[in-house]
Image (cartoon, rainbow, N blue to C red; front, top):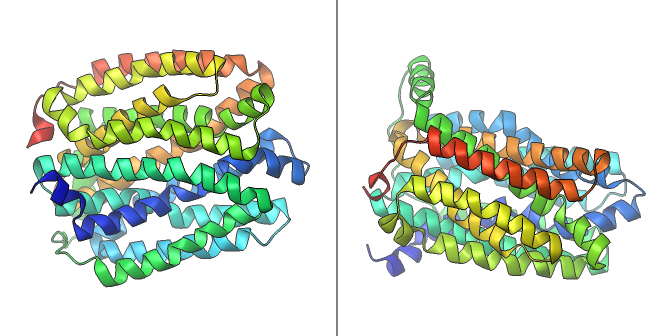
Length: 387
């Protein structure tokens, strides 16, 4: 299938819609975090809990959703998750209580727990070989378009009041209807014995390549959420006197790098091995952090993510057998959520104990360490990603 035709595949377009919902409720809220802190008279560390409680449920629930998707069907898990996301997210816009806001964010995060893995699982179900690499890259590009647009949208809507960005979660309702009506394909045959299914899943996941890729995901999202989403908005406000709208625009503009990188992942995978791409992406982070320290730009940071994240997702999808793909991708989603949760907590601790400058220092050291780990922990997979 030609790449231009692949991009407009109807099933893939529905996956894109799910992806845009999956990244909404952090990207839209990030620019307004300083405004929420001021309106509710809470600290930056307390405000970061709005991200932490949203990502936390996915750490535990994502594997169960993946198993359920393998056993009972992708749509039977995806639709209720979208509805829970939309209901709790919309309700969050109606409260002035920080405690209630945290509770609603927690349950909204429970709904979001499966979205980021089921979209990749469905791509793995539908598209084989190199088409899968290209489709994963396209999906990551769409994700980057969301992370590009949502901060600007969230920042602009927040000019009406800090409550309003939460109402954007209502977009999950029409997407759930689209999934019900339009997402139709033959799902993999289910393993009849649940005990055998679990035994084989865990046996296959213990392979060195899979574990190394999971740890690579953890490192990437600690960097992404700890620095870019939880820390950088405050850094821009304190050092560049940026408004929520300007913060959103800066974060949006930087996402162009991710769109370029991930949209061309299929081409890059035909030139470089997966391992070389992973190591290179991690080594871009220190340069990106040094640049961001002196100017309100995170373009290089996002280019690294645009290459790294869909590459890891694709390799896990390729290594996972069809009937276990939901479990494999959901574990990756769980690890992803763990990184999203740890990142803001770590940056908050570093800011409180040491100061803002040390966030950049520790981020650079962490990225270099991740590059060394990947170079030793992931074997050279050659042209595996092109099969």
